[in-house]
Amino acid sequence: MRQSWLKRSVWFCIFASSFAFFPAEAWARAGGGGSGKGGIINLILFPLCIAYSLWVSYLVFKKNRDSQKTLERAKVDAFWNPDSIKDRIKFVYFKVQEAWMARDQRIAKDCLSQRLYDDHKRQTDAMLMNHTKNILEDIHLAQARIVEVLDFDDNSKDQFWVHIQGSMIDYTINDKTGDVVQGKKNKSESFKELWKFVRADHGWVLDEIDSSVHANDLLGMNSVTES
Image 1 (cartoon, rainbow, N blue to C red):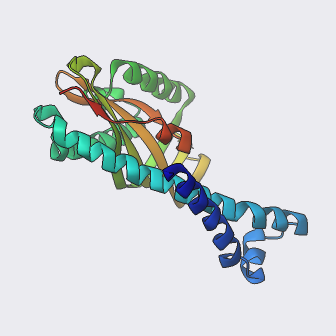
Image 2: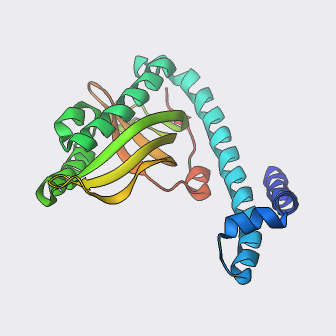
């Protein structure tokens, strides 16, 4: 019954959005000199994208709500304290960006699993070798919502996923000349990602970053606790 209601809601959003975004002048600006055929394709796809975005947002809300209920049961273990987790996510988020820009993963070593530390080090070492530097400015963390909590009797298996919404100016320069080789210096871009944290002896550490958030990813997430 719930699945049917959700599907009807998505199709309603598609239908309503097609009227809301129909004005010709708006699509002329969006088209930016494109052909009439491209405009028609955009007219069809844009409402679908709006509907899909609404669907994903609903799933994030639902999974976060389920996760909060699980955290309430799991927080007898101090590691699962919601306020501490929130602070840890924020600290790790900014520390990871700092280490990436400095091309020195030792800065974030206590924030990363060994697997992710090795992966990031490999990439930033390559930047040093190629004389490229990723500049990150005006870094913001707009929202962090936990969407899955996995609390096991075996603490070494504990993990959680968090839906990250952030923004930053992100561009790459040649560290010899200062020339921009990728990105734009004055354009801040927003993004949404899924970050996986795993339990370590000293606290939660980042183990994976999924830069594409899909509905199927969220549908497959189910919070559980064995506590």
